[in-house]
Image 1: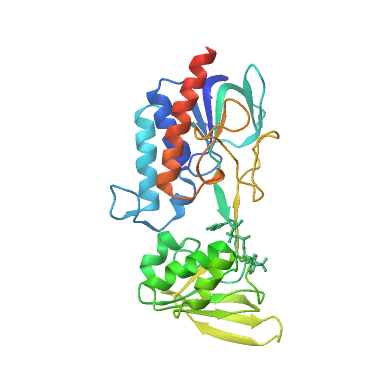
Image 2: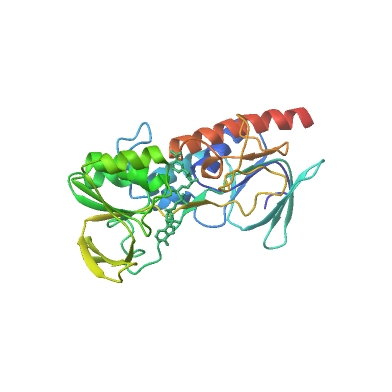
Length: 309
Ligand code: NAP
């Protein structure tokens, strides 16, 4: 670490955190961004991005590199370490690293993102990006005119099955019970869509593939114990998404699904602590929105720091 006291510490190096870093440096804040693994977050492992303005199509990894390059052009200090805890205080907030280092900052931006829950079945991990997807808006386009399966029974599964039904030739919607958890209005639309075939009381036992990617699913009807095979070229898994909120200090409000509640400046219930990107409760989780959050929080943090120094 260059120092032990900063104007601003950013926790997390996805698009939200990097965007915050760019705006913070432009606002002349003494800033460090701390990332425990790969800079870029979920986008770094996303195949093709086709909805980030300015890029008709770009690999997620390449887009992350552009964010990183941009942040580095402002000499943003980026440190590859694990944060153990964020400890709010009146004078300064403290950020404790796993190696024992203790840092102080006037403002902290939490940009730790979220993680799509996995089915944890055979064939899932190795076919990620080769037919297995956790994002219909990102990957649906690659399955135009093809047959796909959607797994899950919550709002995300229903909403994304409806979205996929418009661009694919057929959607099998596979749910482990005989009743959806998702909202009634979405259920009505799903039941009415001729392109969606619902398979209730069924779980995926394995995702089957060849060298070109996903070829089908092995299914089990949990009521009858009957096994079957289903031919599909893609499987979209929506069995829940968890915000990575382990570092969010007590006293910061979260909604019932664990997303951090902020005001329009992305500031949490604790002054000087901001939450941005996929960890923040908002209408949609998209790269462009994460980047926008980064801008908002960094500008607000600059104002906050100015009023304290
Ligand atoms: P969710 O509501 O937690 O639903 C997850 C679904 O996956 C459930 O149907 C669950 O089945 C199923 N599931 C979980 N683990 C499974 C497994 N191992 N195998 C098979 N199925 C499994 O998650 P979500 O749909 O992502 O929604 C998350 C939150 O965001 C919810 O509060 C939702 O209302 C909200 N959301 C809202 C909107 C909207 O309002 N437009 C859109 C998207 C999300 P069971 O039902 O049997 O438990």
